[in-house]
Image (cartoon, rainbow, N blue to C red; front, side, top):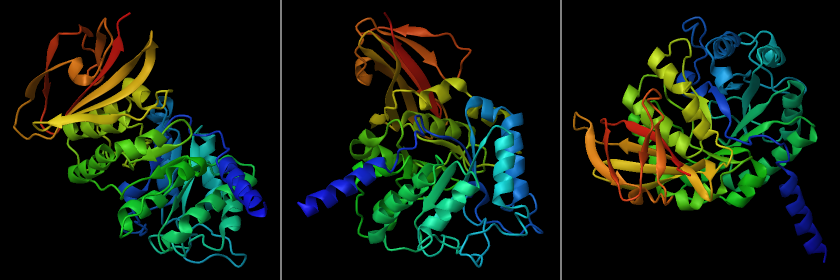
Length: 413
């Protein structure tokens, strides 16, 4: 009987660990890592170093350029923000040169702009870049986050035994909740189990979604088309295993959007945005908002595509099929008409022919079954008129090399 009581108490602790009411839709915002990595020499790189100035400038632009109004609400510092040693009381503190007024000042500034503030810790002895880790300091660090009024924490997993991760992440979630401050909890242990650990060990997703608001499944994305495809392939190949665990409050995270950086063309940017929207990914930008081109900004602020990503049903879509270099990604979304879902459908090309590849398709090819057919809306070309597609009709699609076309199919009443 005693062992049954202990197991029951552990279950109750896990079940309550995520009682923070956050992430009803995938979180949206900006994060420093992919673009700015661990640039800390502010004398040599004053516009790029991880610093108070950089975060303030990103926050200002998010408001001024309409990102906040479109739903991008978090401003998150990743690794390399702290001093290399904790203070005499064991507290982690911001680098005194790059963050002279401390993390609480920065949090207050971000909040004053109507945004939310996030930062980074690591469960191990040190962060991935060698800064102080949280192992043996979990309660101290959870209390610091609350005192700084942090809204989002990414907890990484470098420099620690993977066997200790699950219990440690659960405990840190409990300690954060105990502070009384709701903090979005981004966990990294699945990536360390599935990609970085050899041999691979699949995480328990039932525990994950009771512990974390979002979790990194796979390796860090890098600023290249190849890296983006490597990540999207993971979500295509593992959809049956991971997609059912996504939903309001808990999301798979393929890592940040690359749009606005160096590695993706305009067409490839469309491809990433469409796939990430279909798989209900967090829309976390990691770019230099000061240099984003108008055409990329238009993509990032496209309200129709954001609405797909933020669809309240919270159903993660999947790659339906692929052939001849064309992938078809499909996600059930609102509105529900009668008993039929609407759908977001992305046609993604890996072809490099040099022209838009033409191919016919029907509703049956997409497994769309509304007997009256669908109203089809082009999400990348909002000025284009909608068209109706009926059962037993075919439509010809052309997708540019390495690009994507993205549509919303709404059942006809």
